[in-house]
Image (cartoon, rainbow over all chains, first blue to last red; front, top):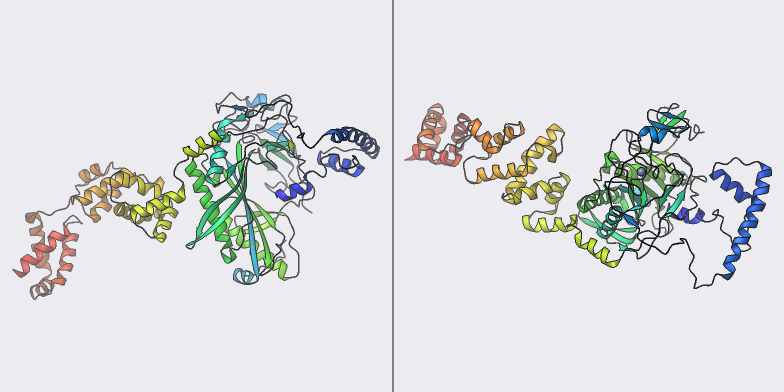
Length: 117
Length: 499
Ligand SMILES: [Zn+2]
């Protein structure tokens, strides 16, 4: 399973590669993964915009030298831990108060997968 | 639905070599969740152990549970892994309502523990299962699918989600490919899961109860023709929830994949589901783009850099691990491999060790637990450890036998009483009046009656056939309902008939 992640993981991650661009197909793929229903004209529009943004950000790579490690966190901290002590949770009413639908004290969500073909 | 042709197991193994991989998820037994202070009680009312952090509400920030990190490092050390000096959490993005955040916090290319191994034994042979990685993540919520084909996610009308489990610390242990196990593959898979469960239980960081889902196995299987060097396409059978099912799932996949290959077909790389009822696997969701998780470093959590001092402290805190313990016990008790295996399988190792610690001879402790009490547990369909008798009780019964105040036959009656809730062994002895009768006066009259009732046998003994006395001893035991001192009775009978 992990190998697959490695294979697909970064391909669509929107990272700039080479000339620094994202294709329309990749944008459509990301929209599907995010369950966003984009119209054709929105896809055209966003693909162009994202391509500009990624190309601009990719310029950072031009100045990033070998001796500068990639940054993932702005704070120079490690090992921030808390003690294993129970804190009060929400009540079920509070937890469900923002849910669009609830039933049997649970969050009610629409059908996840259609019938199998 | 299924047009699958299975190839009989032995035939499949004659032509193909299986390669396995096992991914195991273990919920840690911390008091609170991985990144928030919600409690983790199993079986609580739905959505009573949730908060803004584990519900993924805007603005809520996770903070890592130190006990969970200690727990995974201990598991890593027990599995002979290296603990990395620096690593990060990663965000695994997917759109599925079992995680309200639409992502799961996990680890990707920087697992906390790497490159370990676990040795397992099958039929007296040791197989080293190499561990690729052990990483930290959080468990998901539980969904109830309503409508459609009952209880299944496909075509359900809607689903109801309980997030009590979402965010419970989850450790994932991934093996390297397990090769060259041949026809032992299903047994090696089972032995690995068994040994891993024992190990984690000994480390004391999880209750590892497969039936409650605190340990779950995903089993990868592929086949290649014998002598080939390139591995075949593998399937991943998800959420196999008992040790026996691990074995059966591997065996079934071998038979099924051999059928596909024999027919000139190709094994499809897919997720499969194990069906407990039939012992088969069925095709699950095809992967399509579901596997595109777009991992990236988790921005809400800072990196972990476990100091070497901390790691060494944790190593020093590890208890004796199962393999070392078995070696020690075997030396102390002088038992053969097979008997030790039986003891482990019966769940009697702890019980016998405690009984010995309470003063019993190892042989006596083994005898009572493995024969008498195991038999009763089996009759009741109960676990040995759940019988209402303690190691101290067994040690006391052994002591009573050793000092000669009861014999084995009476000891069984003492266990009857203890198991029936009549009290401690001493109380049962007292109440039931169980005591070996060795007094010459009391035994003498019983012996006289037995001799009178069995004149033929008595004549044989008189004529020099001393072995025939055994039948008379048996009659004396019967007449005293097992309370006679058999050795003393024998002496007295021979004395009376031959002198
Ligand atoms: Zn919470």
